[in-house]
Length: 59
Image (spheres, rainbow, N blue to C red):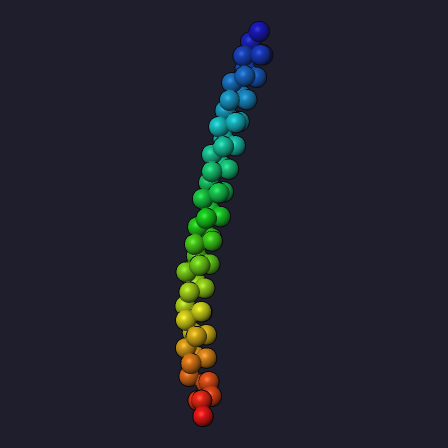
């Protein structure tokens, strides 16, 4: 009886730890995506500026 109670307690503790790690991992993924978006915006602006500076004028 005591071993079954201990098993249930370990399942609950392990499940809560697994959910905590999972939520932390999901948060890290969203943080990484947000960082990539913040890096992509200046690169796009640089590309647009370069294209505007180096384009041939219409004649």
